[in-house]
Length: 112
Length: 109
Image (cartoon, rainbow over all chains, first blue to last red; front, top):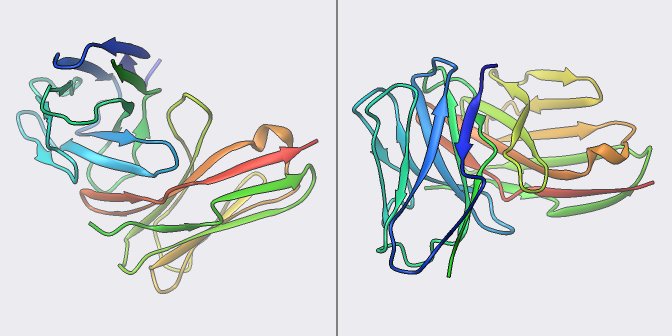
């Protein structure tokens, strides 16, 4: 089955700890994205990557880091510098930067 | 970056009614997309629009790409209970994809 897989679905961490969210796709898509969703708000772009070993900051990149060592994988690290990390995180991919994006099922991160 | 203005914020309708929602922007977009999100899940693409003036249907859903390229609307005809969810519009220009805040649809049987 082709698709985008995010794991885990639920994640709990203590304040001050870094945490890494996984995103894997087997759609052979070049572009991948990370979005953050807060209640009652639209999706806000954290980082995106057009090709392997390249990524760009989105609107709310502070406190986050990413890597793109493989085409299939685009992990997101939420660092202790992120002031309000509790949120629903969505990963997406698209064939290229012009085509529609398809989303994973999301990871709900709760920091206590 | 600029955000999209999506309205209405929420809708409560009876099963069988038609629904209309829209999205506007101060900027031009090359592509308009409509997604539906169920609670705790990722958004699912409903309709993609690539050309100004384009009108596209997907079953009971119809969406249009405004001729000014600054707006789009989505209509749902003869709503059913499984239409419940949050509908998001998105405007896309190359790497930049902006989302509206969503329209929360409730359908009463």
